Length: 408
Image 1: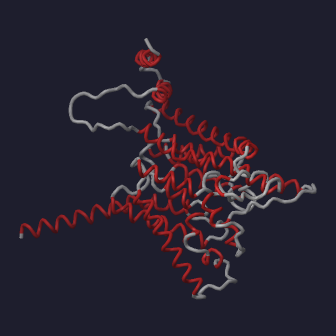
Image 2: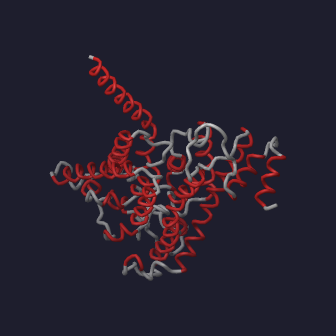
Image 3: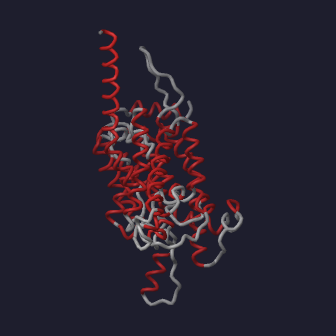
């Protein structure tokens, strides 16, 4: 008798135990489910929820690995230990063991805390409610470390994850029932509860906050500036990064949001596997471009002068908004969440367009925190059911009109 059979027999013998959902979760994680349906017509497919979630995680792994190298690269670059990468994506200054070591040391604990706290709460609710542990948090657990600053205190992350899982998901009934994206709910909690750790020019580069505190305490050290491109533009300053740096990801930012190239490849992978909606991704880009072009026209026409606090982000080329900040990552991995996004075909186009349009709108008019994709997606999560409702009602009315015409 193999290990799988022994575990199955153990599961059958203890089917009435309170803790069985926790055991079943580990069992199904290690082995494919062996239950079969009998009678009736059933949809036959090779995918299941666990395989779907693992596919999304696979699409994010390159962003995670790159984020580890970039965390160390930005740290050493700010200290002056290395020179800026000069030979593109395969720069020898970037792909070094020193950079990876710093990244592993800072980012791996974020992953462990995210999964440990989140899955622990999922197991607890499954045991209390007596249902199976759902695989929905597998993706959320990977998203969370990728959308936070590298130096976020672990206890803050643990508190935020607990809030996001309980309030943003479990109170609605668990996986498939939540109205807000859990990962963005966690990030929103961090932003409003601990704003000094989620914004400013010190949180995006490892060591900048600690070095700033040491200087304030009287130590003779040089300050580290980890300001993002959005922060620089919001202050009306010139950006020191090239378009190639922005696209490839050699810039400060959240752990997994800097490399537009790897995010694009991940998006194409999700489209190829038919897990991510290309309609939402494309319409989000269209919405962002439209809003960006409008702002460029306003800046060019002189309606907003250079002395205005909005001018820097308004005058930034519209395409630049697509490759800086969290827009690309949010569009590919969070706006496309099948639970919280629109479900109808026309609804996806409307939903995605408004996500992109509102993202750039908030980004420009909120210079204190020049980012908008988080709030835009959460806002549209709330309105997604309404969009689908009116799309369905519109279809019903058109069909009723055709029926009346035929019967007349």
